[in-house]
Length: 369
Length: 269
Image (cartoon, each protein chain N blue to C red):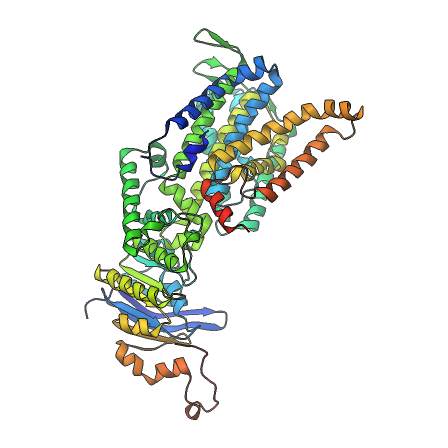
């Protein structure tokens, strides 16, 4: 997760020297990320539920960064993104569970899941190349639902997905013979499964961050942004908009596929319920709230939107009991209510997102009243 | 005349019942500045759009540098060496001036996803070359000091220059400018004229749509006049200027000739 001062120079050539305080900020951030499981589990005493939430937050960072390529960079509104997460998750579930009796290793399934999700991205992208804005949103929304409904119904005549019951008993994630379901001992330190999983997820998420940062400042990244800004002009500049758009769909989808595979291995259970439209909307909200097209902003959006609702769930009941003596509004409704309020406030007061790219921010300042 | 760089044969384009282009044939020699003028709605921009692949012509076609141009494939037209600017400026508004020009290099560079991620020496060298060329071109059109401003924050005249820089970044053999002087003041026009002459001197053929007759007549080697989608005349400026059909197209026929009167189109020079 890039520190703030670095992003200001993000668009300048690679050679710009990095000041010492940026290094300090990076080191602090790295230390924080490394110690987070202890902070959450030990110091703050929040327990395993919060470690699980933390792991999901890291998965959502991957999802949001993948969607950011499609929506933030290339400007193609995708409301069915969770379908790619589903493809990755079911790929893992079917190839490493008693359902088919297959138990392939994670290192083989995760890349294959990414590739299959990427293929689905192209399948979604190809018929929608001429669509923009609202029309594209409707088609992608339909695509997301189609995938979910297929997963729900592919249990007859041949049982492939086990229908609404989902697939259970999925093999836990294991790398190089080390299973993440049992405590892992690294250099004399014993990591509990949730903490070990956190480090694996974090490592992969950092990989995704690295790849998106590199893509952003590249010939391909510029072509995506050019398409977002003006498709006709992009064509006139010699950009093959068909291929470059399909590439955006495929890249974004493959990140979703990896996250889906990790999700299946982590949960040990997948069912179509986990891949509803609401999930797509949630990931889109992370991208938009955080700062569309700006990688640190998108990460911030994903972390906030996955942690805050959980925090809220824990706080809602005790706070209401303390204030009113009994529970006035059921926590789940209150959560959605406040979520809606937060969305409206952000759109009113920070229309470019909580942490927009420095260029966008400058522009809003200038063109503002 | 040597072999033409661009040869348009019988180009036609209909929009519903409106014949925007009717059997337009013209040819442009390498190294010349070729003007395309005509009243509003005469089909000049439609001709550009057919040439650069944004529209597929309904009849006829183009031969460019000896080989036929594929219809409705804008990025291939750019690859073949045809670059254009737009009548209503179409820049990448939220990219910096430099990035806009860097996008123009897309078609002449190769780095893909793998190169971008690994940033291998070849990709790094290519990236550096792209940035260097972008800076050169910004300097060439005279807006080097605005390199790191967003395109949308440039003045109107600078935006036109930036569009030309972006078009030049694709290494065109034929540069098509759609009303580059529109909205410019006299000083800016003079500078633009110097710029276009310089581009030609560097070996790029220029096709120019322009309303400013003085600019066209002073700059172009040959001029074609379109009216109601038809090519009225094609010749050197001095001849075109005196051609009665051109005067009629621009100012309307004299009342005693037109019979019905008021047949003229509301064009202006």
